[in-house]
Length: 410
Image 1: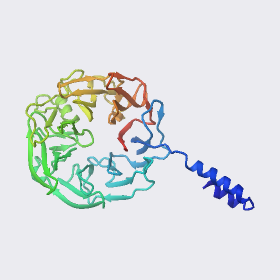
Image 2 (image 1 turned 90 degrees about the vertical axis):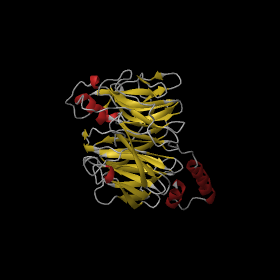
Image 3 (image 1 turned 60 degrees about the horizontal axis):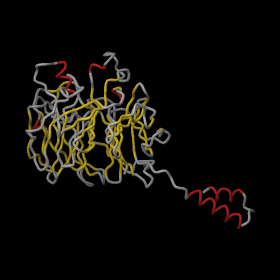
Image 4 (image 1 turned 180 degrees about the vertical axis):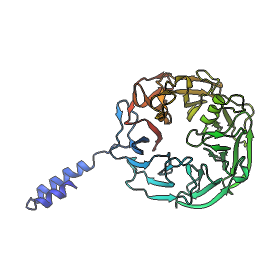
């Protein structure tokens, strides 16, 4: 404490004066500490910077001063229970490392200075996503690997088993698990039949239904209205108030529709209703035919806002000004978008368009949806008010770089 240092320097001070200083120091130490409620990540200088911040109040600025850093790759970031789990994974050999870190979140909403646990996955499984089932069971999704689903204990951070998915592969021995979700004791895991990140096979959309208690694959359900679902690093399933799950095909299927027309590739959203383990035959949406969309359009990640509204970044090929740009910064071709699954409609929101390097981070806070964007108007989180339908053309929260992910710490 500041008082103690001062007393050591001046040992001849009276006890009364020392007590007075001690009292003042205690008051200083008891001053309320700003609690951080959110965690975001952004990429710069071949690293991910992961930092917490207080809230989404207008005028907030985020700093990397106390950020945790991980190498470039595909970042997994999620809070489960009282801990935050972080990993920069390698997608098809691009960047990352195969170590999952567990950080404790203190009472002030800040991550511990050092991880309280870590798990380095054996071999070269290319783990890129984690799906939590409980405090003691989670599934590590592998990409371009051996066709395995790794089961581990997030409490002890140790691998318990592997589930062999190779019997469900088409074209090779690896069906490439996608972003899945656990509901009612079942893991719904998309299977992407792919030759590479840039080439998927013309196969029906597929989801493996796995019993969490036994880790047995009960069945693989298929739907020929869409090609591929839940591609890791690009899409995420959402679940609505009724417990219905929505999966999206993502960028690869949409690009195949654009550049290889007539070959059988199909984009779309599919639903698995509450209490069921089959695709809902009464629900299908294409994000290439809704309002404001076009051939080649797709959604990047999804966040559920309530009342049948899903929010995403919609890719619009017509907004690409420089096809040769490899930085994903020049072209502002991703627009904040609202999908109404009840009406099977979509619309572009009154917000600026973002570059591809910052078209991932979406979060619901109260009655607002915040989109992490890198736009011509500035970098940060842009607010859409669901209650009024108003969008804001300047960032409410400024960030040093375009956000890659954002989560709540509450």
